[in-house]
View: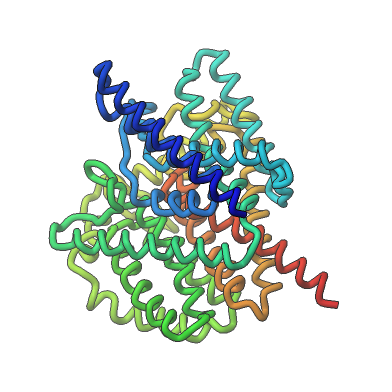
Length: 455
């Protein structure tokens, strides 16, 4: 033990000296300071992930919502944005791979129910995109960027599921996810005096309130589940406060797609959990009565504006309904998506699809065709069924029951929001989602192991 500590101390000293040498050499040859600093920061994160993967994952949890973004170009009419957590995730993954290569007893890839559908979906993305490049419809650089964005969420899933071995670890990670939610809610609520829609930190000009609404939808579901299945009384009080902060921030995003998705999320609790039915039904009734009276003015205005600016009129069940430009664009994206898909129904156009599509389902159809949509649906079904098994198995385990129930409710909410946004490709929603999915998968293994050992 003493030798290990001495060895680690020696390595630490060598790393510090190497970093100082890089700074001095860079200054001497006249390089801008930001380049060696970025390299050093990446090297530090790599070293942390090599020596202490748990700490690296905690850093990654904070970076999910608390890291800046950088625009590096434009594809299909939208800016190509890289966030610091994109880089951190790749660096942490490389450090973890290096650790696995040296400590082979840790294993490279844990067997999970999601391995096969994930790999088949990635292969489909690569094949359809390669065809697009060969036909001259897609640029290799754009394909590499977008496919890497898709793959990095799965990398996070595999890294967390391989590293997670105890319930104590899972509790620690969930606690930091909730702490990050608290910090971004504090930031969001400080924006209210400025007017406009609230967003997460470092969102750039204009922000991404719809993205923030999706994140809060998932985290609010987790918080509600822990309130229903508390571990201690003082934690319950703190969670109720956090739930109120998250819900108010959620309202102030003024995301209509997010608001509509909140109802399926609550319905999931009411349908799946007996303990949730009475309190949540009462809360829903009280909310329906009081929300119109107590909601901020911006919320009332957002609802009225939906139908006040008559950009386009649709006929629904024999009635004409006029909506504003934003709502019309999301409705029309379904028609555009299906119309384009008819031309390439099997494997689609490749990643990216080549046109802006504001819903997840026809976007997948356009990018990877019916083959990709089949594998994508397989992934979603396996994720939900795994969470449901954990919920059923964890009758005497409040933590596992809360995480699985909250995850299922948040998952259904995100599926609903995906009708008006490409939710499953947005990093600030998908990073916490796949982190939680990995915890769910490992909890199932732990609970199954205890059941097998019980007799």
